[in-house]
Length: 411
Ligand code: NDP
Image 1 (cartoon, protein in one colour):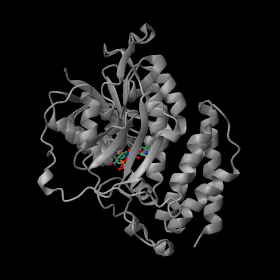
Image 2 (cartoon, rainbow, N blue to C red; image 1 turned 90 degrees about the vertical axis):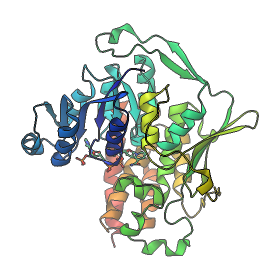
Image 3 (cartoon, rainbow, N blue to C red; image 1 turned 180 degrees about the vertical axis):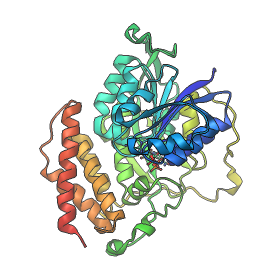
């Protein structure tokens, strides 16, 4: 396997940091050619000064001078939303790791696909919002969409042998084309169930009558994973797992009814696939995002690294429980959104983003997050098979509606 040239969008975040670690760990397999962030100019410059990619980008144009001053070499500097799209399409890049929190990664991801780049997707929000469009564009442009989310990466690993090279990449992208790999198709006809594991978050065992008094500090303490604030709150409400159900539906082309969730507090089994013959395959490792990031970068190869393998003598138990669906309504809301399709998943995602921000800002209670999302979903008239504009419109509409709900629920 040759070295893969990767652009990281969201380089200053938790996934970005793990990706930089992977690149340090397997330098003969992964080269970073571009780094992008939103507004953390100092942290971006610090990473760039170490890795020295040929290009960097900051979405917040007002911070460009700070970035320029903090850099100790002269890379190409991109800025703004347009800059994000440009760095995602670098001639020299082969793969774009989309690790931008929220919806900001959608347009750069689509631009990268159009330019013939493979995607490694951590930003589940973009598949929830626009999974139909992203996967269709990927197919039409002959690029791979590799899952970074640990659960989906686990499922992808369990589906090894079910991936079929289907057709050559189209010649229309030949000038951008950087890899000779063919496009692929997944055969999931004998998959009975995809079983996503969830840690259950910090309130897995908390009585529901105590939910009202949960503070942001308590919700930000994840028992097994160290992640950015938005996804940590999503893990506590189980909206993270809800988003992942819809992500799995699009990534693997399975109906929502074949996607299930099981609570697994130890976060060692990262997900499972049950096949038609009743056999189940699972992927296990310690909870470190470097594992899935590396697999997405080196797929279809496996290469040695310095990550610790599982020590089974120290694993005292692996437990599995049925989720508390009534107490954590996020899973039911996500199933409803995923089954309805159209613009409803984008609405759920946007309302959730607003509700999480309001909770972190201490404006609303923890259970209000579910309440706000449900209320906004109830008010929405979903558009079937929306184009990008319709999705972005629904996203904006949901944000405005959610802001209204926050106002009325303010503590
Ligand atoms: P963080 O909050 O830690 O980092 C977010 C990153 O996105 C930062 O680099 C931030 O830049 C950047 N960013 C935010 N908005 C924009 C924007 N508009 N344009 C460009 N860059 C932007 O998040 P995580 O790393 O935890 O999560 C990133 C994504 O990966 C999320 O979608 C999450 O759901 C997903 N994910 C995360 C996992 C984890 O373990 N953390 C696991 C699986 C999936 P800046 O620092 O400058 O603000």
